[in-house]
Image 1 (cartoon, each protein chain N blue to C red):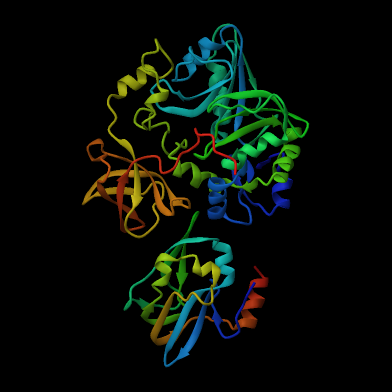
Image 2: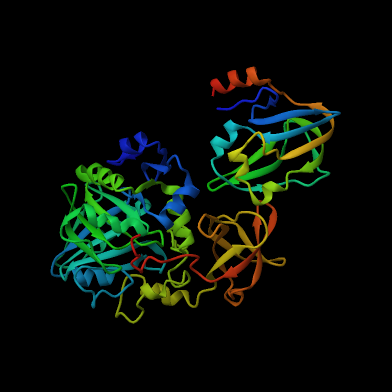
Amino acid sequence: MNIQSDCKYTKSHEWVKDLGAGCALIGLDDYAQDQLSELVFVNLPEVGDAVTAGESFCDVESVKAVSDVFSGVTGEIAEVNEELADNPQKINEDPFGAWIVKVANITAYGDLMDATEYKAYCETL
Amino acid sequence: MEKKTALYDRHVELGGKMVPFAGHMLPVQFKKGILEEHKIVREHAGMFDCSHMGEARIDGPDALKNVNNLFTNSFDSMKDGSCRYSIMLYEDGGCIDDLIVYRRNQDSYYVIINASNAARDVGWIRDHLTGDVTLTDMCDGYSQIAVQGPDSLKMASIVSGTPLPEKYYTFTEHVMIAGVDCFVSRTGYTGSFGYEVFMPNEGAVAVWNALLDIGVEPCGLGSRDTLRTEAALPLYGHEISETIDPLTAGLDFAVKMDKPDFIGKSGLVKRGAPTKKRVGVKVVGRGVIRDHQDVYDGDKLVGFVSSGTFMAWINASAGMAFVEPELAVVGKQLEVDVRGRRVPVEIVPLPFYNTAREVPVLK
């Protein structure tokens, strides 16, 4: 399982990549995409939507199930990865490259683990 | 406690993700995943462990009389070695199950029934038999492997004894595969060409391995469901049920109202004209539709989705729905309530894919 060291992680298996200036990218990590198996739809949120650390901001669907995606930060959605609208499988193919949203005006961070802590956490699951 | 089929260990060895289903532990998918398995069946060949399904045999001079009484279809003109789809009804016209009857000869029939209803079906049949007839419950002793997809033709290279059945909805017995005495029908639940192979439990692993050797891909319940939905084949509990009768489900071809009588005939008459019609619906907006979601025409609730999924061959989310008959017109635009969000859908013809009747050309 791939865990990139330049990201922080939530317990719900999203990665958060700090871009500086109160901005960050959020995506689903390798553990999540493996658990979900092939995604067939990403219900993308809208630019301007508020996100709150620990709360769901969108959902993704595999053939058998729907899963919520949780935000690791509190802020406002500045950009949405439109490519995922027609190519949801990119999250499976390249979970760290296939960011879902870019959040700006971050005012708070949730409980985030660094790569080492996250790796240890995954081993307990 | 779920039962293991004879192939359980093989599934685990091959990386099957095991889940409980209809009282058995079965693979929902293997390593390639549901979408890939679906495409493999359409383009090559896949195999499904269907040992959870039930089998029974009805024998005796009164077998035909009982088969005609218990099931909605007509069995008088059936040739030996042929199969016929039918529904079994309660007195009130509600469905107990759908099933396939295999006529061995005038006095002997196999009945292949759904896993989830097997015990109930056998109990019902037993309680409603009359005259000189016996029922043999084969469920526990028999396994089934469904081999589906154009490359299923390759099965001919591993059989001896009786040749494989050629015509759609026919079967042959004493087909020898890997030393195992099987009966094989040209039937299936995927909408692709293929066979269903029945064997005693002790022979299941040998047959499975022989099929693996000729390149048939192990597939699970997940792709079995997406394939049958793409082929618009009914699933008990979805397109037919205790409340959805077979005429409402559009299965008129299997319900012979001109038969003198059968259990449930008067119940069907009492129900009157269906108030809903089964249609195909395809997402024209964005999203995935699933069973039990409501269908709207503007603000008016007009029906429900009976089976919905993402179909890997047509590469779209689509399914079957029951809507008010006046709205059941190809091209009609409706909406499905997907967890609070309205997703635009369009009524389209059924099935989305079905080439099961045609014999493919082996490449």
